[in-house]
Image 1 (cartoon, rainbow, N blue to C red):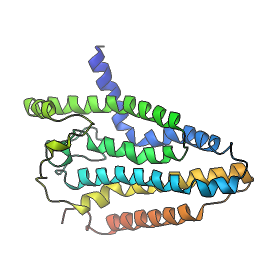
Image 2 (cartoon, one colour):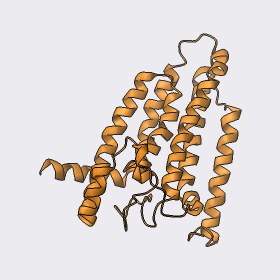
Image 3 (cartoon, helix red, strand yellow):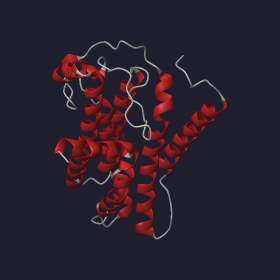
Image 4 (cartoon, helix red, strand yellow):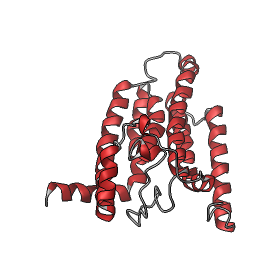
Length: 250
């Protein structure tokens, strides 16, 4: 098999299961987080002193979420979706808004969203390792995605890709979005990502408490955040199941 065909095959497979990437990260993430707490002798003091880093890490994740919100909210219909089993889907090429600055804003947003929990470990080497693995993983997905788009749109996509970088934004290329911002798309598509983010953080903190005290406990701040995210998720799911409010753009 030619290398380009092999890369596309790998990319299609990874694209289909890309939502599981954060799960693969949980074990090393938990291990490095526990290691970061083995140095201090006063666990409670270290716990409180690490709070500013936690807020900074959450801020990084929220930057990633903001990038995703802008990309999804202004995207054309039947593009920028979370489709997995259906494979690649695109009825048009997004070329305005964030898509005028970089070709894959959703993957850049994903990176920052999951870099946040990685920063909880306060280990720069783990952050670099995560970045390298993330780049290798999504490089193949982007290759497969672009092969699909070239096959479907031909010169139109090739000309677009010549002007717009893949993941490093060229902000001077910003073009006013041609579509009206859709909160319906954002609410419908980002609910799981928000819940997963706060669930991972809550599990990290609970794991640390168990390792160092021998009993299960929780950090009140992150428990409240998780409960709010869970309530939000359940409300949106119920609305989707029971009504048509989120089935079409309004």
